[in-house]
Length: 350
Image (cartoon, rainbow, N blue to C red; front, side, top):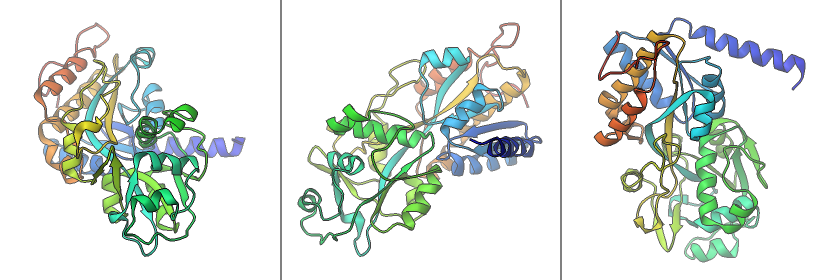
């Protein structure tokens, strides 16, 4: 990046955070979380008279912001390992879950009737399936007259939790993908057009005939994008709240740090296989004790009162009492300069 571009970028960041200077709590990160956060923040302000500001900068940038202590919290779909959390003096906990879906723009075709197998989806992103009338896709859709149209791949060029979840699924579904590219929040994609943010994927797909991309389900529905059926082990799965809930109900954290959750099992039947957890990141030893307690109060309110808002965005709230108890155990490790835990139970500061 040139000196001028770097300077402009720095000033944009400074300006953005200066705009948040009147807020009691400041957060940043996931673009996937931005729409629901706006409604949660609005309702929280009405109920508690506390200002919360949230910047939609992407999961990767959100992690960097909380690591640099530019914000009170960050939201991310890129899980951090215990090593990363310890080295950056952070804690991590889930806020809600959502689903990543493939989206298509094929003129004259009702893509909601189309079927794409998990392996074929990976082969499309590998460039091995390059046209919509490819024999593999035709065999999956014998009753659809697929056009002789090039497939134009769209992917997230920025560091993205959606990419992390999507490539996790591709890796589980296709040996070639797993061997060559694996799982990553940002990678050198074999083919296609890179765009920034979920909104970027939506705009690019709407303008690209023959395009395929991947976004969070709520963004796909709100933008009226076409979502195909996904064939996994002979089962054609519909992307909807029921299939998401079926997967989410059986997910469990593999580590106490919530670093990783069990992958949706193919034996789930109708469970959607590409689930993503949005985590919050908070400093374990915050500089400002009152800001930290306000931040904890906000997330406590989200668990207790934000479920309806979260569901309205086709997302899945954390409602299991055992899971919330595990989260509060993480909160109790947040301490002040005297080593005293800042979290007891319920709201601790107003």
